[in-house]
Image (cartoon, rainbow, N blue to C red; front, side):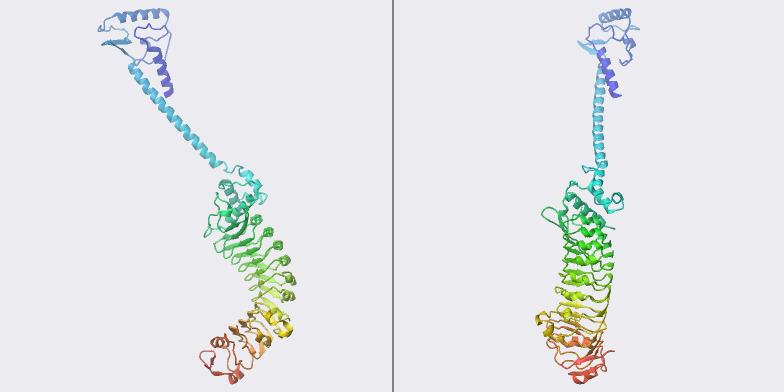
Length: 537
């Protein structure tokens, strides 16, 4: 509207502003047809007689004296001479035209500013509605469908969907779909979202920084070419599950997630981590069985899954882990028998299967594992006799078989027919709470490295052998057996008398009547509800 008014005013001004004595054009409007303010939108062309009459009237008006009074019906003169100056009667109109033009310019500037704001707003909305990735959400979905089913990617409740949206809307690296770093980054993002149920980690250390490589995220170690080789996130309040997309980390060699709150199953996809050398998932809430595909981890050296809720039997593929040196499956709910195929784990040095529900007897092949130094099978439901070879027990460093149902006697032998003395490396032998019978083997008196011996709560008979040569022995537990005879006069130097009192305090004098008479005991008195052996100082 302002532009229309300005244009009309300018058009009127051009038609009506003339030189003082210039003749009027034939097509100009007469003052009689103009509005009081000098502006008219209706322009008409008068007839020729009217034009001649108007010309004569104009000449007469110009020849009249300056102060002559205006006659009735006479037109207002267009120009008045005052003190030698010609004043345009439409000067006010010109000033008004300037105001109109100023308003028009201001309106133009406002319109331009609004246009700029509109363009900025449209650009902002485009950045919010159009994916920031150069390929777009559909292309990324198609690329990720090679690793995850589309139905899972499109499910907004899944960690995979969250990872998809992050890579589309947030990630700033935008790896090529053909780059090996693309599935690796996707796997790491899925892992984060899958293990942050109910909140984030205690310390995220720059995880999901869209501007940096996953190699710069905390707890992560990479190789020379940017491949993830190690993830170590112990005790960091991880809650959730292990996604199958972890199998995309083809170069991962070490994965440690101990002491967190992970649950769910070990997926079959874990078998694709063929570069894996150590797997530590202890002290979590993992359930289910060990997947059969675990046998594909032929480079695995350390497998620690203790303190979970894993159950079932060991799959036969489990015995294909021929590179395994350390195995800890303690404190779970495994059942079934230990297969003779255990002998295939020829590199095994440490084995802890305690606190489970394993049944059956000890496999005979266990004695053939010459590198096995630590055997922990306590708190199971194992039965039967111990292996007949004394080497099974005494060539190890630690053997714990307590709280089972073993029967028979402890294998005996001599240094000549068992092994050389340097092979007697046993430091801890714990076989309490079984049903072992027979005497304590005499060979025990030659175990110079033995530090802890617990044969309590069995059915052992006979006498206590002379243990004076056991220079390293610090703890001896023989209570709740059927031993007789005397306590040896010479005791190991590190075995304190007070410690021996504690170990034997539940015995009554009637149980060790012969010991009461023949040892260097000074007194047996009722100090409490049980009996204490008081040694002569």
